[in-house]
Length: 270
DNA sequence: AATAACACCTGTGTGC
DNA sequence: TGCACACAGGTGTTAT
Image (tube, rainbow, N blue to C red; front, side):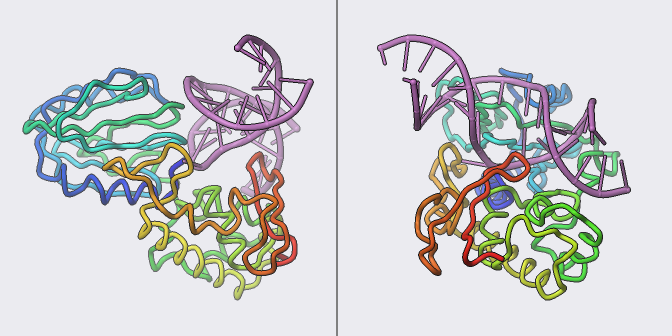
């Protein structure tokens, strides 16, 4: 579910509530997520949240003892509760704070994760392999072209490869390729520097707009206050099979590319 | 080394 | 109404 905008919207939503708050207890009802929930989380009583950061699609909750590393997987979401009600079926983790606040993690498909980085550890193997942030200056046309040099895979697959650029998932890959007029199956290495520049520009623009709109809510994503994101109304191709292209009215087509639903305009994307 | 397929899990929608 | 099946925002692992 959550791509970079949804994770960033979540970060923005929880940051002001939990920063400086002291953990009372971490309650784990379902430890079996993508990986077992880190056992260290049960020993965090008394630890204050010093910072709430994001790296790629990971949320990083920093404490003096170490960092909680949360990934939302396909269906995860975090909510801030001022008075926690009874947990629902897929409410797997609660972080209780000393003043009564609760950070609640819900994840029906359980593809998400709650991992732990010791304070003295520099990083984590899952973070080490990650490409630059798409919204950073390091992610530019020269970088992208260099990174896809010699790659024979379709450009859409490359855009979703977290070792090339992080944070772009299936929805935004489809959108960006439409906006740049590039066919999703275009072999990556055949793209010119100019095309790479277009991609970089549109990736940054699209992700920023989506963050500003509160992310994309298709079914179960919600912001940390329970409100949906509104970027779904701005989607040009994703989920619009058989509907008219916003540029030329040609019907949007859908097909599978690397196991993922791919939407495009056959007329506008070459 | 690069690429493709598979795995994890639950809920929902579709077609018979 | 019930059932079988396909599919869903991600990504590490395994196979080719």
